[in-house]
Amino acid sequence: MANGGKQRSFFSSLRGKVTMQMLSVALIPVIIVGVLALYFSISAESQANDSVDEARTTMQEDVVGRTLGNEAESMVNQLSTMIGTIVLDITQTASSPNVIQLAGGAGDVATTTSFLATQRSLVSLGDQSVFGELSVIDNTGTVLATAHEEGITRNVGEDLSDDSWYQAMNAQLDIAGSSGMAYGGSERIEEDQLIRLRFGMFIPNPAAPTAVDQRLGMLFAPMYMNTGAMATLYSGRVTDSTVICYTSTGLLADTNDTTRPFTLTDYDQWEANRTDVESAVVAAIADDLEEDPSAAPSGYVIVGDDVAGYYQSSSIGSMNLSTVSGITVILSQPQTTAFASLASLDTLEDDLNSSTNTMILTVALVLAIVIILGLIVSFMLSNSITKPVAQLTEVADKVSMGDLDVKLPPPTDDEIGDLTQSFERMVTAVRYLSQDEEK
Image (tube, rainbow, N blue to C red):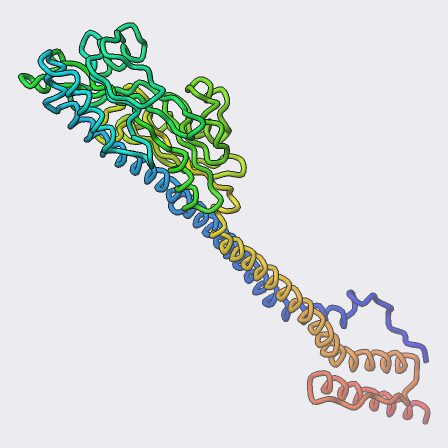
């Protein structure tokens, strides 16, 4: 006999409703737990990435950048120590009796010249004297005695009062006094890769050693420096690095291009041909001085693919360089080299991202498996509930059409089993009543 029950869609049927209710009860806690796990995992990854970025920035500033800045400062300090030692020699020479007596008008030219020649020979750079010349010059600009190397033209009695470098240095001594030196700029000796720095020392009056207006003259002592060799030495201490050294008189050294210092012979030429790193350092130093004029500018900059530490000193040894910018050293490295030690942080960040992605996939897979299993289990459980009801519905339809010889499903030990037994008793009673009517 045909089933007289209404045809319903799965979701509107009792089986569908029971299935969905069971699935909801089973899956909602799992989904909530999964969503919370994903949220906390992603949040933890974000916090960890922020911590890694902060650690990377801190290490760049406190480790890499500061290390380069410290190396630049070390080179300036070495230059200061070297020049400071030479300054002491010049000071002692300028204060010697021979020089003071001659500058005061009582000394002997020949004796003083011999003394200056001896002093030149005491301090050498390889087989060459550090001092290109030592000349005693009185307050009128007249050369009183001189000892110099070949190639330098300097004569006793020569008048230097109209020379711009002498005027500038003489004015500096009026400012610096006996505690300082005068700096008259530099020139390059290309064939020897040397820098010749013009220095002048205060010749004191024994009666008033510190009185500027009573000084007896100037000891002119131009000094040779192999800044290129020193820069190369420091460059070798830092992997794949370039050392640049300059003052307000121009470029002194560039280990990346040793010809530059001998091409850019003054500050204006160098300023017009500065690299991006050099320009960035000049700007950074200006900012440092604006923030604290009393502090020595130091730090680091990142420009393009390079990171550069820098340091500038306004004094070298006991020499006051207040009239010039001082010596500045820039030590630069490619970022790939400078920050190579931070690669482990990138690896850590990649590992964190990978772990988070793995967790997301794992949670998604677990949720998918749980949903599939929940569907199967829910369908089986709902079927165990709705199947007997469907069978009773089919029997009821048959009875309603007069078929009293129906066979009921075996009763189960639950409420549906009780309903089956009650329905069976009802069918039996109807069958008896039907038989009585037929009699």
